[in-house]
Length: 382
Image (cartoon, rainbow, N blue to C red; front, top):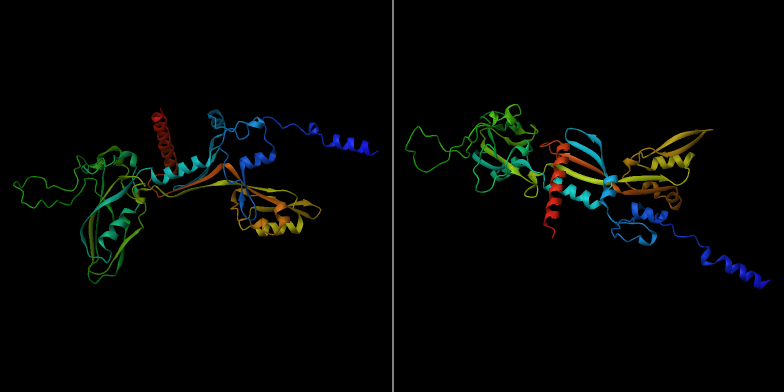
């Protein structure tokens, strides 16, 4: 009898009885590790991307980045679009590409911003340097694609410069008041300040030299005839003037990028997050369902009536989940009920424009810049 039991035990643990490794498909636990970031109560796991092409070669799975696979899986879905804000989903890309897109939006999409300030008179309490800095941060409503970059040796002209004038005075005996960005007046003919040459001109009929050399008025150009240039927001406070104080200046706006100075950045912020995935591992009913709903501060869960006086929790708004993990911090029983994950290749992207350009235009311009960068890299390859 003992010999028969030993033979049966050997047959039971025979290596040939083990199931074959599935070729072409990953086991569920490896597929989860490859495509999801799992958020436990203490910390997230599987946060690193597996880039090695042969990571799953023994299972017949090719993990390399293929162009046809990228073209079939990549997608952009616009979720919300307003005048200054855009939310969209970028699907089927790696975090490195999403971050490159974000950096291009912040630092490499050009805009127009005030760079040079000529102050004729400033008797306010705001110093000239602070006043110039405040003017530079005012978003200008102008399409930078219609202007050229200006180098140190270039002369200001109608193709590379926008000139604004600010002249405000608070009369003696008047009340103190604020100076708003609406006081910036566009000068389509260019600068009105005359350069001090240091010597009297020989001809009284000659045109005085100013700080710009416009060959024509900017409002005579088709692009600006029906679209006057000026600040995007007219209620930005520049300074406050008391009785007897005065500000008189000219501000010259030129084309630049956020990499040079933040005033040229076209976005207030551009950010992304991975798509949340909330899964109920088991049916959560009655009082436990009510407690689960109370735990979530952003109302991800809802309660449905399943009849016979019973209620069940459902995941109603998974996109709103911020992964605060309040729903799984009550002990192991809550971690077994709720699973929190992030989809590794699905990003919720948000663009908040400063107003210089609409957010959908910023998106297309950033794509063009990223495309140009890729083309330069390909060209430079041996």
